[in-house]
Length: 391
Image (cartoon, one colour):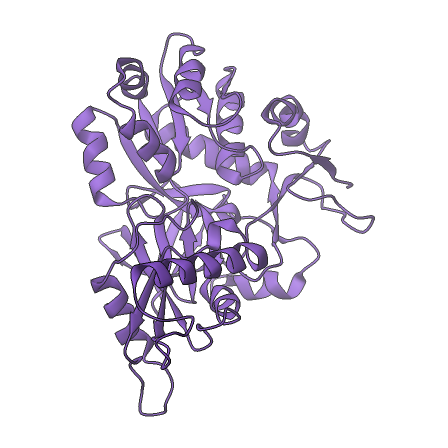
């Protein structure tokens, strides 16, 4: 079957096309323009281009059955009703908001224009009576909590039966602020490959199975994607069968499972999720090292209160005190700005490092390579800049 390209930013168009996508007559291409050879199997509802971590976005093939199974399991877990869409419909979390509303027989409220507390309130006030739900990323939640001195923002936030939060780690302090305000938060874990969140507050949705294999979280069940468009090799590496023939998705996330509850501790590879966007720290480091004075810099992951995760540059000070990596707030600020600009150009704005730590010398392993664990610990202990990675 041929794909029809739609702009995921045009939520109205995606919503209008959803019925045909879910009955298999009009599969959608979201986030990319399909080529002549981009043909999908019967039953496909959508192909979503993910943010990726390698510079070439993956194109995840989702069947109507997977999207429906995910929406039905969500309704069983948290209830069904009206949904407010505050995310791009080109991402799986936004698309699922529309699918849940469609299967509930309700009209979704679409946030108009840029996400702001005012636009969120306006969209919330467009919902009718009855149970209401929405899905946000942590940065959006932080924006609303910062504006919660406005009684209308508080009123709308408290009106939801559940506010799903996914796309990145939710800082505990942010969740505590939401709870203190009376906002009912549900943390979700999943990806495009699982048709959206499939683990809620650490507990898999009904029908979803979880396992930890060699420290990697794997997921199975009816919400799994069919694979990647025109990439059989990646599909075979990522979706594997066990001895019983059951199909599993290798998440690439490290974590544990205890008493049926999933705890994710980070990425197995050197990738962070900042503001819902996958960022390869290897690519960031390569870009940073092209900046004079940062040729030997190391880029490591750090926690970020707003974006979940961010990155920090750690480098040795220039031997020449007048050099580009000279100490002092002015020189250090200029160096960080140059690095952020370079990363924005070569990797993307969301990948920009937020901090720069200059040391007399970098910790090294006996091999002479940078001791990344020690460097990461130093970066965490010396949170020196307050620039958000996606700001």
